[in-house]
Image 1 (tube, rainbow, N blue to C red):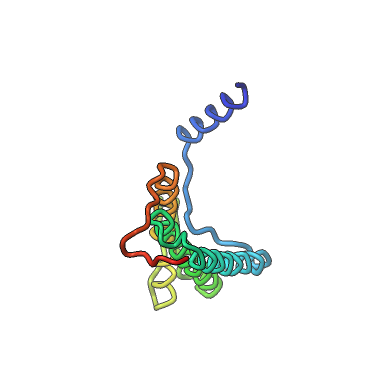
Image 2 (image 1 turned 90 degrees about the vertical axis):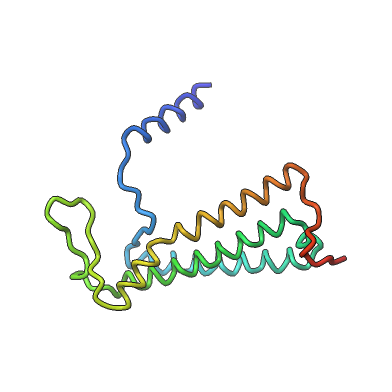
Length: 156
């Protein structure tokens, strides 16, 4: 019971004392290579997962169609994040400035790199729907409502 109370206390403390939540985390140059490889490995793994599911009759179940759609979005998220990390290395330091009295630096949009970098910083707009699709598919599986979809392909 004590670990549960400790966890609840820490969660409440975190809610009461928030800090900046940065969705797109820059990485040190030396750790970036490994991090980029991890994104690539995630994409390959998720693609393999989709291929395996499509080889079975699971792909015709509506719950699994949600999971497959979430997997595609997660692959897109990982690819977009890889490009964002790459652009992070190629944006000039002068593009970021801290206005007087501000805590968060602003980005000066001077070219296509900065504009694309700004768009890719909104990676949660891909990741959150992906997680929702996973949730929806898993919820359908749990409820036993994973009947074959009318639009799905029936495979043996």
